[in-house]
Length: 204
Image (cartoon, helix red, strand yellow):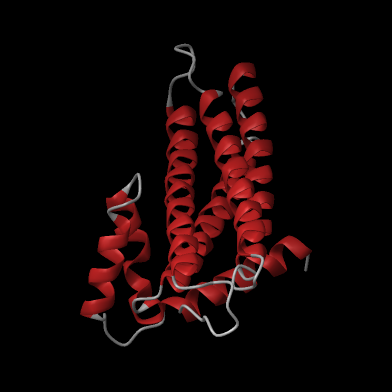
């Protein structure tokens, strides 16, 4: 099994464990909804994170991790989908070129988000600003790659089912990634407010 497939299986297992819940927690659901209101796409945020209520509870850290995990999962599935589309028969030369470029950009976004998720786990250390800067920079780069994919289909001559399918995946990835960036920034702010640089601080 390739490394990418192993990573994907591990991520899906992590998402399953994060979302496993016997029943929604009303208090946690209210917390998630309130935090999502600060994002650019609140309805998308609530829809994608509501199943994590038991794990998240009222923890900015767990919410940030869940949001980034969802962002990476969507990016991986979107990248795989668009890569397969690039191999389809019957594409016009302009369409094939745009889809191939998009596939490359989406793959780069996956790489940036993978790095971000690993770095997020280090934000509990005393070097909060350093790790936060890394995480947010890499997520910002992922969003740029996703937007570049979208821009490749902005020409009026690009129309039809291929454009619709690619744009739907890329836009979804960009939205959940943008939301994750906001929630991570809010987690870092809460961590800093509660004394991230003291040994006793342990914001959930």
